[in-house]
Length: 119
Image (cartoon, rainbow, N blue to C red; front, side, top):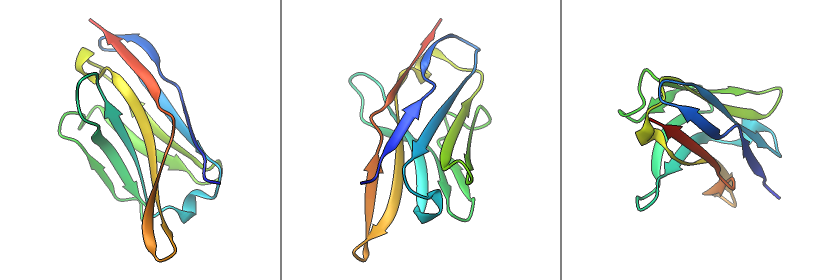
C-alpha cells in the first residue's frame, strides 16, 4: 500500500523558514511526478510546486524564488524548503505522488501538515 507521510509543519513568524518532508513507502523512482499542494481555509487546494522524475521543476507564481522542491532518492523523501514565509502561505500542505497503475496515472496523497505563518 502506498504511503506518503508529511512532516515539518508548524508555526513560524513572517519572514521565517520551514522545511517540509514527505517520506514515501516505495521507491521514489516509481513516481512520474511528485508535488506539494496546499489548501487554506475556505479555498481550493492549489499546486505549490512539482518535480518530475527527470528533475524538472515547476512553481506557482506566488512561491517562485522563495520555495524550493527537491528529493533525496536514497531516502525516498521529497522536500519543500520554504523561505521568506508570508501569512498568506498559511495552509495545510499535502504531498502528492503520481504513478502509473494498471496502465493509467494514479495519484497518492499524504495526510497533510499544517503551516501557520504569523504576522
